[in-house]
Length: 531
Image (tube, rainbow, N blue to C red; front, side):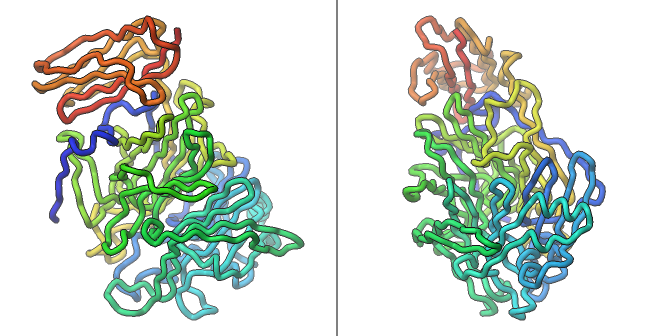
């Protein structure tokens, strides 16, 4: 397979190499085991009181290329599962639901969002016995989560806790559903009717929505009504599906979403590189920024630092056209878009600048694609509050299910055994390092090692840089808004250890960032002044 290499020199304006993240925290991934855990991918989830509700999705791996084998009925998830991750219990059944609900709720790639005790589910793709074909279901379904969980655990009927309405505008799969105040946002996706067939035969009709659909949902007397419907179309930038969308708190305090990457670009079968911000007033493409890592639907988490007014979007594994070789600091371009172990983070700073960063930790296997991140604490805006996390190892959620592949590239050789729906669960922890004063822990073979101490500090800050190359060394200090406030070093140095001091006598209390660049190697260290 031919791979292309891109110099990181072209990416330094927005791409942070491995090392210390823009924030003073690290991720830790630990595997958990629950006996009887089903293998699921592309499913729907909700939770109440620490118990997970898992609906729909598939029990097999990556879809095969043969039309007779792809999205086969045998791979449908025909159960509703309740999982207690603390008590290690699993139970569930779809028994007793009417046909319309059963058909939609065993489909794949439904759009969904939980608000309070209600789970809102839209669309999904799968086989309908009623239609005698594979279709995108034109349904909106609302689930009473605590009642369904309790009924399943008690072995009693669940039928009365679902409400469904048919609406052709809801026939969408592979998009995302968000909510701001009382308005729902059905973003991108497609309508796909018929049997999947990549062989160039007309066995299906595929139509991208190219839209952001906004509406409210009225529930009254056991019926649902879609109200205040509007749609904004953009065939150039919203022609995408199977992407990631995360809630965002923009620098001006406004709430919204960002659409990250996804497939396919108009006119070519490659992932999107640009990202799209969605606000109540409309959507805009992020200018001058490309997302190179984690470009397909995967487990993800939104982390907001209210003190620094910084938004972090974290992506766990999945598929990606690009991977980063951290030894040579080059991007490897594989247009076949393989499975990857990469965990990346896109950070938006208070000055609205954006960077992409490869985390030092990776997924334990080629997994994360079509998985879900289930947070420990649910919030209305679906964001984890970094400032509420203590400076110790803290569980923030679990990566559940998804596709696990045995090889990076299997699409053209896939016979159904090269990948599978994962039963594995990975707990995700944040470790905030506010005590050691040493932010970096470089490995011996890294070309650039950095130590910044003391940190936090109420006086001057020491900066030690060890470089293994001869060339220009740049050390610059930025405040929380992204404004450069000091240049400590900017000139040629020899290989070896170099010590510098940042004098903070006339600097205000707050968060700063020290950016160190040596050749193609770059680090950014967060510094907290407490004086």
